[in-house]
Image (cartoon, rainbow, N blue to C red):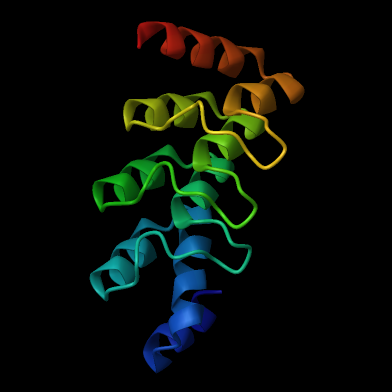
Length: 142
């Protein structure tokens, strides 16, 4: 996999490099993420599936990559091509620690997806009660 990444990065394929960033984020490969960001790939550049690297890392449960991307300027409320934010994706996936991190980084849980469902709605639909409770408590604190 990394041979393909090296080839794309070496040849300067912009769209390919963007997709490699999202893929590296989804696989928690901090070394490749740092290298690509250092080479000027936009931190919010979507991958082939239209998800931002931060949303991809969040969906896969990689809290450290989420924090790294946020520190490097990723927009925690960016909409992916499917109309979902990282918080919406991770709430549905049930990764409690990532939801907690995103809330701490300023993720807006009131953003709705195209069907009108919030992060809380996605967590409830997927029966992630701990995430639902976290989102309710976080909302009360504001």
